[in-house]
Image (tube, rainbow, N blue to C red; front, side, top):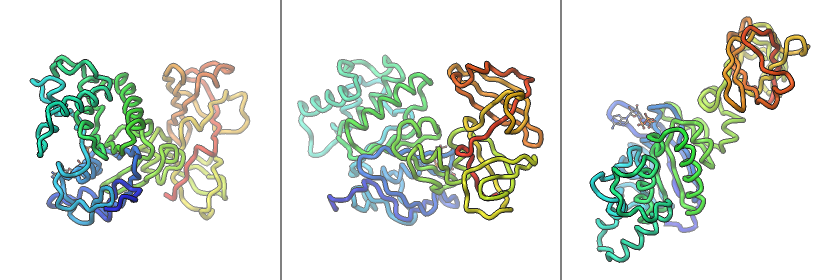
Length: 360
Ligand code: ATP
């Protein structure tokens, strides 16, 4: 084991097959020590399989998983410096909170003294802000509190790495947002490596330092949340992370695209050759909605729907030859114009920095 290793977890050319099904293919991934990494992707893309191979619940068919610089082949889950929080928490409902958190410590050999167990359980409960709840039964706890009990139980034996499998999936939206902030704060405080599995892009973007976007058993992008959003590696990432308008066209010159409707649209400079067939991913917030009479440039369309979201407004705008485009506008930026109504003729002005261009 090399203590100087900066990567806590490494996948080296890992493939996992279940019989005829290949769940993940040739995964190479290095998770730095103390990072918060989210594995993000649609159902069935192989996220949970990767997590379970770190935890030791599955073995790679090919390749190697390392933790802290040490190869993990043949090392069972309980001997790995990791712990896992499951989606449905897997708590013992008939035990009280303390007994649930203490459970793993009590199984350890050589035995840990009762006073030491009690001290560690108390510390873990304080960590998740459940000090004083030790004697409560699990069924007397709210969903968010149960979530924290599961966290405390996973943290009580001081793992180097915490694995979280859709840990917030059972919570309602408001609680989920609150727990996202708590989890992130906790991770920063503890400084241990977190690997989170989620299919919720908002969750991945808001909590993690790095997002590993997966599709069909492969990693398609591993980068910071901002980079994944602003510079998606391909059309799949652009579609999956954030909202996107998908258009097609042909590159006219270095920074303009002739859309399938015939209209010309500005894009960031690209190195592709003029004439290249393209797929474009345009963020809804990169399109400005202007009143038809005011904007000379842009593309003409008609508002079909308006969804009021409080601080922002989402419009669906029908454009001849392009179909319906989604446009998001901050309320502030609309104040002068007022809200457009369904039926209003408008012009759409594109911001080149929010248009991502991929060869078709
Ligand atoms: P979800 O978000 O639905 O949990 P996931 O991205 O975590 O999906 P995995 O659970 O890793 O995906 O599954 C990847 C692929 O491997 C899927 O096609 C799945 O059906 C298959 N798979 C997973 N576990 C097994 C198993 N024990 N036996 C056979 N096939 C499996």
